[in-house]
Image (spheres, rainbow, N blue to C red):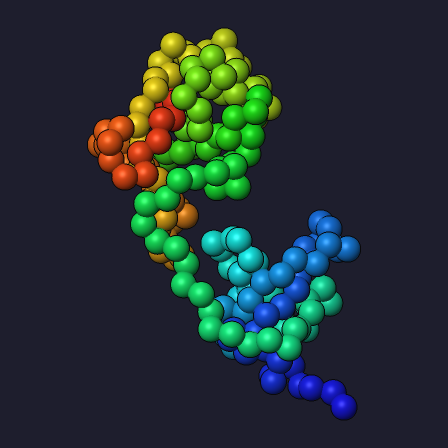
Length: 177
């Protein structure tokens, strides 16, 4: 007995998906939406905030038996971790922000570590570090806030905070030149 894709491809169905870069590693997720366009499914992998467009007949998609309510995405203030940033350089999670991604936010309260990470990042992306003024890097209090799923950015930063504010963390910020 076979089950039609239409019966399997339903909102809330638990799935496993292997990404093309690692076809042997199936990751758990959930179908968050079913559409009529070419990429008929939206799949959110567990622990992620974004949906991936996936064809219902994708060869690296496994349908599981369980169908559950699709959990709401967390919203509001949060404390970021490595997975929420662009990556880790010199042991420090870092994100490039701003209109052109030229400003840096570094998740550390240690200025020396922040400068080392920013320098490593700049070198990796091809920035001539001799033209970067690392003396502009400053420790600041910040609150990170999750935005809705369809927002331009997954999260935003509020800088108008103090140490005593909920979710305030100490970061280093290097503004764009």
